Length: 133
Image (cartoon, rainbow, N blue to C red; front, side, top):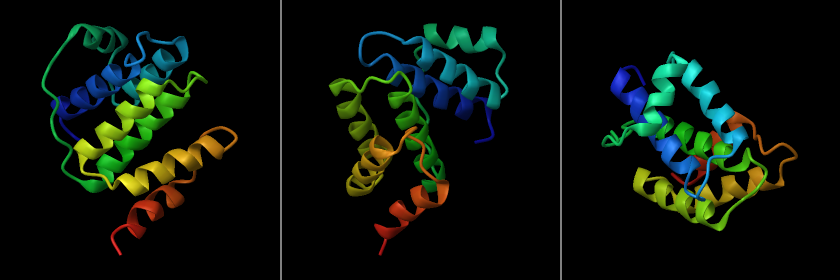
């Protein structure tokens, strides 16, 4: 993800997902701030994204789509409450990204069973690779 538009699109998708349950939890906002900083956005620019509705750019590489799915899953779990709307929305987003539904359900189950919802990157990628065989 190199361009400003791609990075902005990623954050806009995450912002939209973070409010699918009706409100933005403090931990969700803090997680989004960390992602924004990693993508080299100033806090003022990032906060302005909450007032923008721009079309999302499709993510071309499967690896980047898996990364974005995992970021969204981390965001979903970071407030400690799993809302039904979030669970439905993340599955729909994964389908729209073209990710395998069996793999996404398996990742979400692994994250739910993990003590801190974090799973190893190798496991994440292997789950999606298994679906190609």
